[in-house]
Amino acid sequence: MKRTILVFTVFLLFPALKAQDVVERISNQICACLDTIENMDSLNAKLDRCLPEALEFVFNSEEDDDSDDTFTPSDTIEKTVTAVMEQIGIYCPKIKAIILSDEEAKYYKMSESEQANEYFSAGDKAFKDENYKEAVRQYAKAIKEDDKFVYAYDDLGLTFRRMGDNKKAVKNLEKSLMIYPYGTYALQNLSSVYLEMKKYDESLDLLTKMINLYPANPEGYYGKARVFFLQGEYETALKYACYTHKMYLGSDSEFTKDTQSLITVIHDRMKEKNTLDKFGEITAQFGINFTE
Image (cartoon, one colour):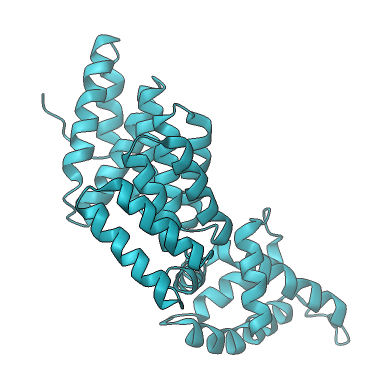
């Protein structure tokens, strides 16, 4: 089923348009069949079983009961299978999450070069000691040993960000995303760098991508709340802040204090603009009882 996984990867790059009814029905049948997925091997095994079962179920139900000689041409089946494989991630978010997790494991790992790993570890130590110049030197040496070392690019980008050199931070985080376009660490940090540079559109584009790829990760929504707040779009910022706050509460996260602070600041801005009625309406929609 390697072909299936390859097509899923293409889906991640080019999200499909709205599926035709038959494609949606087959996809939903596959989703119903995929009751428990533990890893890529179990996904492949289940797809080998679930795909033909779903095809049979849907095509049989599509045929005219009054006709004894109706059949589905093989080329139609092949085209339908291709469409399903391209679009199933829309109907089965868990499949996309498993594929992304598997892909991430291929790139977010230590280098095969022991020398690169030694430089990287030295860079981490220097970073923790806030010796950023030394951290830059060590991370750069790690990359010289292994120019596909995603960890090193990410941490080098973060180090430049801490040093206030946003241009070099962008350069290295973009290199990380060129190697692995779906890296949450690079997406989140690069969006934050663009936010600091007041490149709001660029930041929002990355956060939108992050939300599409990782809808269960609250950081994409929180990032958007911050961007919209800085743009003065307080109602939109409040909606994202409230949504994130509910996600944090659901996971008992310590970051609820961050969303609480942001919601408070938004409240103050909306009070200045005499739009507290709207503030109350939005917070009520999310079941948040705000008290000054």
